[in-house]
Length: 373
Image (spheres, rainbow, N blue to C red):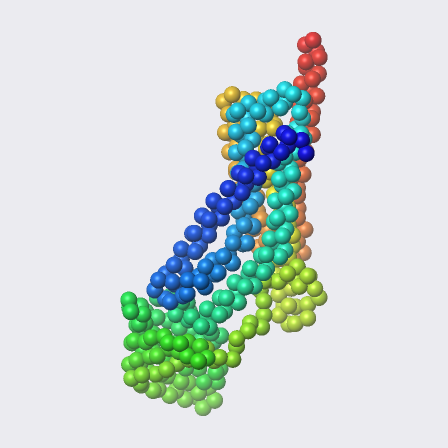
């Protein structure tokens, strides 16, 4: 690798790393700040919170990395233009490909990192995230209970709390239990508290009423109580028996469906798999968009803010397009080629404009010089 390539690539890589860290921290902080209340007021262990927040990182990086590459390329090429470094390179006879080569090498490296994340770390983190969420739902039900919200703490059981006191008591509580479909029960209480039981969390209710409806006998039984203990988990369902598409590795997504759940959600599985394969392909187009304002056209002493603004708008459109295409393909799997056409067509068009358009401009400039001579 030439010293010029190493010089530009080192600047691009350092800026990409710094931008990725800054953007990831901002997104992580905005998402994690909602969990701080769970530590302060609801008893979630700090180590559980840290691990819970760390598992969100791969999903953030799939969004942040392409944007960080675009920002770093835009920043470095703008800096080199302002410092007249690009002008010197062109004066030395370097063409568009030589000037763009460090950024293209960066795009290859980031694309490989993106594939590592989307194909391995993303499903692994989502799998651990869902397992941890299930464990919290089972062992730390108080974390999930929010004031004024109907919360499903277990399959068939919904809990509502009106408010929460500073000492952890729950006021105006309603529990609707459908785990026994033949005898659903509804329990209301003025005051309650959560304690840890042998098989999971137990809700202790005070001064309330329990209503049970027998569907067979068509009878409603009412029981008033001063104190009543209600287990929020039956203690038998410790392991999750199914996985979301985001938790599956690629070979699990594209395998022949076997269970009823896999057959009914086949389109959702395939859409998620194709999206993970297509998402890293946006990196190349973003790199070209970052270079285009400074590689195309003639040198301007007034700056390139108009070209930069156009590039930023196009990146925003491509980001929205990625989300829209995933939703579209999820509802109609026959459109899955659009997931690859979405990033590849703009990238191919930009490559043609940057390299072949720049080559024609260079030849035209040479012919003009020869005619003037």
